[in-house]
Length: 84
Image (tube, one colour):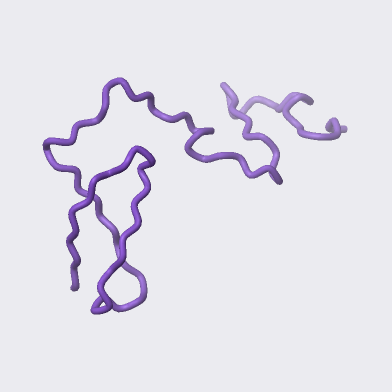
């Protein structure tokens, strides 16, 4: 197994770009991010909602959440034309 270790500072955007040495072959690999003990979650930062984490594809209908998934769907749950 080959490994490459690099220290980074996580920016506010939470996006990181890493250039790997040519000695590492192209192909499938695993990326592991380890946050040191000095890094603690920000208690004032709000957790993103499901919708914010996974933005809806505009080509798809809105995601529907239901209290009782076994209950029949109402006509309002169908996007576009009303259900017959």
